[in-house]
Image (cartoon, rainbow, N blue to C red; front, side, top):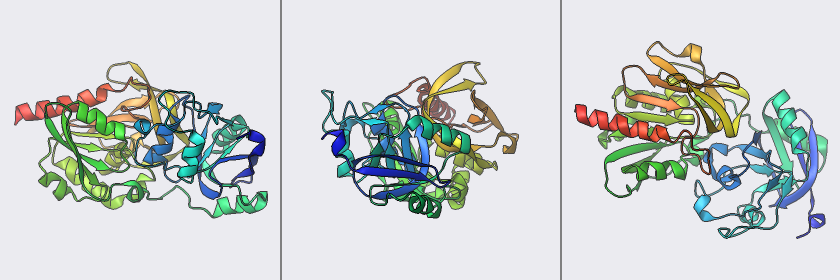
Length: 370
């Protein structure tokens, strides 16, 4: 399909800023929080990451779709983004792994997308003004009308989305090779690669819905607890935070990432806050305060734990070198730790993959002490 054959599309932000471009993917209209991702590759992982539920994502890398789509790279059963924004969309898929083009994939899943806009201008606007609501349409091309629709759409603050993306029933992922440990994963929007990493380490993983009571989880007698990533505002998860607190008090080895990290922070008595435009991409520098080393890490979060709110028994272990926000913490007496970023990152970077080994070591130590 020639680019000149594309229909017009309009992106409007709640503050009235608009961007006109060309439609690709599905036609229609959608709204969500406008955010950007700085990764140079991994667009399929972004699309299928449940943490992006409720958001329209702009990719800062200018050419997207050039290596197509393959089922192997999906992080969940479907795309979760509300809309997709790129500078230039490739209609070709130049990879031996490709099973279809990104354009056909978006059409199949009815994801509205726009190309041909100045994504640099959009990203600079978001960096200056902050992440905000937006509406993307191929149907309504009136700027004032679409901006008003953006303002009427749900805000991300206090929005609960884990119940939308979590599994409906318990399921299991078998260990690869010899089974060494049994782990229960709270699914707030878990990515497939997290489950692969745990399975590769010899863990049989029982994945449970986000609202599973603590007593049901503990009744499974797991060796460890994994708290997954997920979308939405952690402040909206009052009941789940209470269950996480009860699980944590049981003293089992516990590993939280991203949304799971935020829920642990609140379970410990801390607070969370909304970042201006969030961290999303594969190039975030994080300093390990215990080792003095720096990791380049993959992020996708719009909220963070307030360091000042954490009680004395919680130690901050990692900080972001761009804005000094909390990127990791641990309990001083219980085998519990968490990171705000993605150690399972696919396609990368992989600097933080050692945190899965850290979780395994905690379970080994707990077993030896039993």
